[in-house]
Image 1 (cartoon, one colour):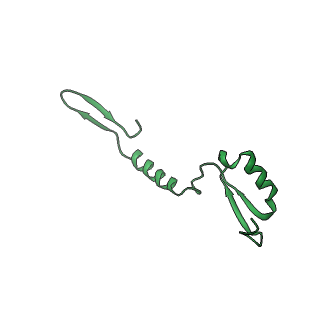
Image 2: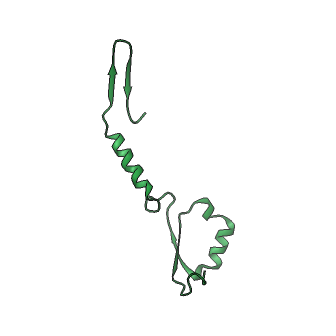
Image 3: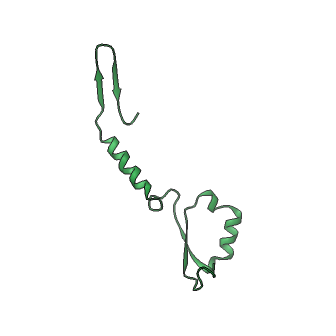
Length: 83
């Protein structure tokens, strides 16, 4: 890490997923912890994955659609975005 961050001012952000918590990585980070600042991050944080903001808007948009009831002489159906 000192080659990439010679002034030891680098930051590493981990989101606590399994691949970041394996024994090999954990030992490496422990050995080199003085070479950078480790920024812990929650798993599946919307801040670390911008597409999550888009999916949140899509979900809110779909949930705002009122339930539609279709009735004709042969069938009855209820359509809802939460099904």
